[in-house]
Image 1 (cartoon, helix red, strand yellow):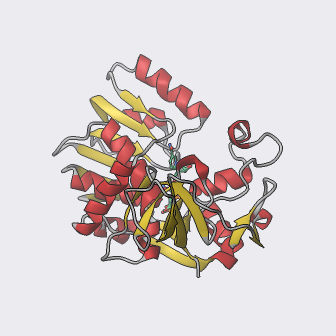
Image 2 (cartoon, helix red, strand yellow):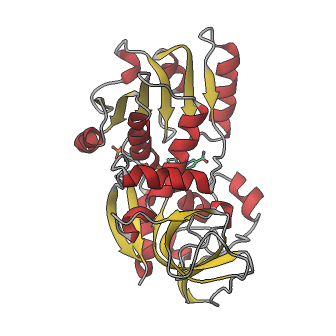
Length: 320
Ligand SMILES: NC(=O)c1ccc[n+]([C@@H]2O[C@H](COP(=O)([O-])OP(=O)(O)OC[C@H]3O[C@@H](n4cnc5c(N)ncnc54)[C@H](OP(=O)(O)O)[C@@H]3O)[C@@H](O)[C@H]2O)c1
């Protein structure tokens, strides 16, 4: 089968299209013919081993897992003898968690993985881009116990996590302010944000408004400045925090007189979460945002674009 393989950390050029062995499902696994995947910011981090801590988990000198890609949509080609949740021919989508390997024509998954039946109203490409931002936004908004009518500010509202966070926070009944640059203001409004702040023209932390939840999706916000804009007992979500921001966040939660809660760390998800996202898509409450679509053969270009850090929503990859 076709797959994008990387055997060393580095620039997008380390990604090579190769023929590799097609996997065979175990008793509890399904084999998926992948029709679409996405290039996410997380894939870029793994490819570059950035931050350095990536090497501690994924291989000190070279990657231990040689196939990237964490999201997919496709159809089930065959199943193991013990599989009960799915049948051959089902269209499914989901997230691989830490097993990766969706930059390929086929992948085996345990049937109990973060997988759900694909919504019928959107294409493989459209649904493949949902799980990365969708599970991240859902994980943190649930941890923040988001409540109806709360004021929520999403910083980095035009990225993969941001576009999902705006839509999910609206679904949970919040009053949402999105922060993005001029070019993305209309996009963020179209996703349902009640207010949009253009960060090139206005610093949200200086306008006197306060929020119950501030969700920084891109790690570009000043933690100390944002404290001014957080209500007493508010929640600060730092989903993209590196080690130093995690330390700063924890220190701030201990020392701030506002008694704030700070959330960060690696997300987790289940099949239930993917089913929840499917329900939102079916109900027209969650829409995919796709900036560009590339083929598997154009993976180097796709990574080069994502690495610039200014994509609008997501980058889809078609797999023929
Ligand atoms: N905790 C976890 O387990 C977890 C899970 C998933 C992702 N993450 C992390 O979350 C981060 C974001 O992921 P993503 O995929 O959403 O990123 P992304 O899609 O690459 O973000 C792109 C967006 O960031 C915005 N942006 C760039 N510079 C900005 C700035 N200075 N101020 C405000 N916005 C800015 C861009 O808008 P403009 O072009 O308008 O500037 C662009 O739309 C990554 O670092 C990823 O590793 C963490």
